[in-house]
Length: 288
Image (tube, rainbow, N blue to C red; front, top):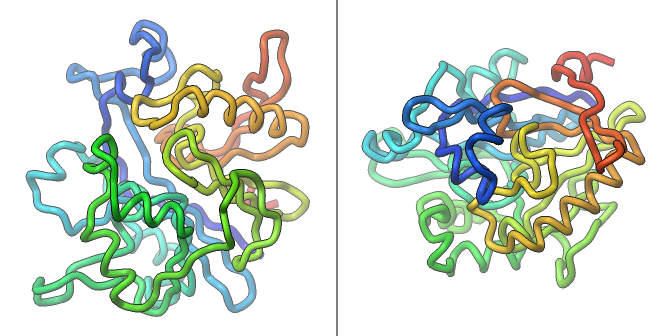
């Protein structure tokens, strides 16, 4: 197995929204804001090469939305999925599976693109299976008013209409499923959105956890620091507490999808709960 960090593009989000009830005077110490209260955000995806499978975890927000829409998210830098894949000798047609932790636009928007004539949308990975789960899919296609702006039909329906959409195993209850169709474990959690999936990849004796929105940045390490986007923040506190204790006790490597300046961290037990242990770049972890 080989792992590759795929940078799908950086953007900015409102710092207050990203830290919920935590005051700015506290969160800006780890995630400094600009004059418009915006903080740096990454869309760092993960590519798994395992035998004949080439699995991409999440796909960023893509590039099909109008300029006015992108104006809300202040993209910066020159990262893209295409450039990141090419860096390792791959192209989008090589991807066999796209696993989406959840279907908010910044996690799945890159899975769908315009056709050449810009007359209709099509899957961006023509040879891939797209993976979600039934409960989250239903949650996304019939969205509540709180999340409606994050679940965009143009990101979702083309995957289904193409026949490339697939569902993971039953998720009647939250918890960990060790064996999935993609050969890595998945933790189902419900605080951020219904049935978000946190992949656990066994890589060279290490457990790499793709953190998605359970812990978007290193600044969200403290348990009460959950985003204002979470639909069930009190549940997020419980889920995050349990996960971080397991991560500290088992030396998990936490792959940070949304931290533009920190890539992978480990944590340990401290006097007042779980604290940072070490920071790593992806190349440091993936080359060993």
